[in-house]
Image: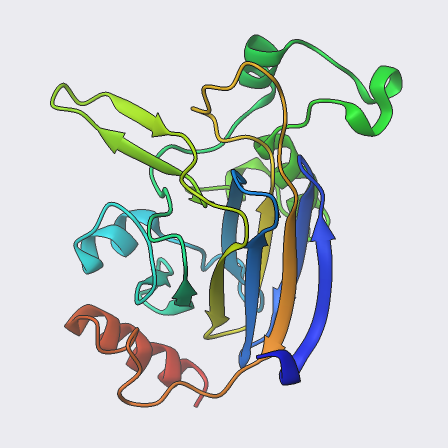
Length: 237
């Protein structure tokens, strides 16, 4: 991967980032300190009405967590991204994202005017600001994923946050199967039990990667994935 590296930068804790991840490239997100949370949202850049579909992603792959071998389906049955590498093993797709009310209730109220870059940011506002740069708004923000975080559900249906799911140096790699608008935010997980606002930075790196083969692990994970890849390839004919 190192020989095909195209770009690298550090996303500070609590910050938002967006990029059009081109087909044939991959985004690696590395938890440089341990304990990171990265909320993520995905749309087809050429047709933003096609976007990440969480229910279909989980239902098609018979899972309530995401890891290597899984793909992120769009609401048109195509594959936006494939998870080709993962050293964590469990990424949360069900707990949603933080908003301003939750952050203020858990950590107190700050403003940029008072605290400058140390102010307490949240994922929802960060995503809406970023979507606005592409002519979109609140109606365009749907279900998201929390990379590096883990939640479990007990027998009563309560969702519980599992601390320390990601160790220092852990990473996940997303291969783009079409030109995908990727939005990331590194604010704390909404169920994080820490009493202090301490979002962690992550390193982002983009590399050129080969076209997936017919026996690609993500493609052959299940028949639904194979169908998703076929629909995606048809889209580019």
